Image (tube, rainbow over all chains, first blue to last red; front, side, top):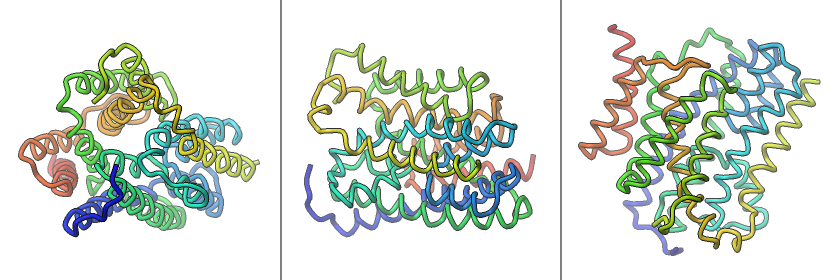
Length: 229
Length: 100
């Protein structure tokens, strides 16, 4: 792991890619704002969720439980269950980012799916930190602005699906997974994880399928004998 | 009650994030933890793709997003840059919804 400064070209590439993910993901805040207000939360409560909880699946889980008539605290428990995903991400990123004290405490707030995905594959610490920060901060800013806009405008602003942004997020995740699919064992784990996730979609709360897929990684790691790299 | 739920979620989710970053590094030095930590992004990214593209609520669906993902695969095989892959998929899905 090197701390060497990045060549300009690589630096610009990471910033450009990270901002791209930030824009595609942040725009989804409009959907969250609209759904949350429709579920009966106030604009302030909706904005507080995006500012303070800041992990999309957990936020959607909370307002989803409330919308279906569940107790707010039951919604909070679902949100935390989904938040355990970020603990796994942090476990993976801690040695890579190597931040301590106040920096670690601040970085933890923007530790989400996308900031992890945009940093975990980098070859140097400098590159990993840059991908993490640009992705995390750009999503944080856009997600919160979009949440406010969505909450204020309700459903009137229209559907991000109209612009194909829902397909863009899947494509972004695939592009990030792609370099890891050279290894046969990774292909098998990826296929099994997708199958498990889709298999449980009909029967478990939203967001849990992704957690179930983490079980595939646990199982495969326990069964594999050779080192991962 | 709602504000309590909002604040409980905020504190809980933040502590879960911080806990992951704060685990002592000696725990990561075990081969099993290292293998699992390496496989977790593969499994989670794959599951995120599957759920994002092929489900809506509790239903499995095949719609314009699958076409977008197919276009992404072709672009990746052609070694297209990241943003071309991402917005190529968006364009394909938006186009399919508009014309079909």
